Image 1: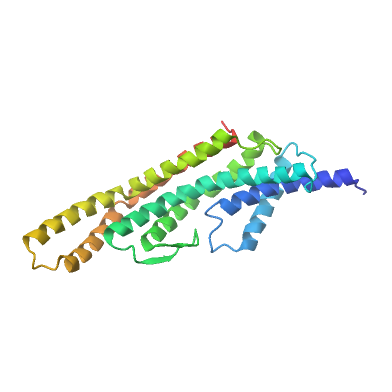
Image 2: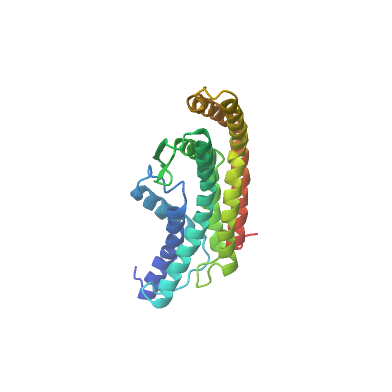
Length: 258
């Protein structure tokens, strides 16, 4: 069996171009970029998804990867993959920021550890929320939904020199305001309860100056904070479902899916 240079280039390109977009998406997706997942595992996952996805793509441009158009095409595919994964990164950042706000309010801001998802230091409460929503993500088959979204993007936004529009990129940047607003909603029950407790402690401190309000108030705010977090846990799933659906709608709008 003999292959010409053009046929061999087309065969390699049919797998190479989808691999660029898929690998960029996995590199930006917070679930797959966890420090618990080895780089080789991520690479193997990108290769496996490419092998499954490539036969589903109708046409792939025959462009030399080392040419100017090839470099531009690689940049476009990386941009698409990072844009899709970056939206979900902001979804998980909602609960990281929410946990940081609660931890600062209840006096646990000093208790920090390495976040396994982002690889940076974060309060223990933020890590708890991140691990919780990660479990929600897999239980609700979110990983299958995002993989399906990436596969569908090759139909709505085929491989070529046409990339994401400026308006879509601006929508992704503007969605950061939604991220901060949703993080406030996650922390709002704890903020309200701890604010009332701190006001009460302030009144007690004025009424009884001889009482060491800092020693008493610290244990009260931590205990009350944990209780509020425990009571508000069912709301975390609701918030996660809501913000995830908004993220899916945004990505569908970015890649042109109906």
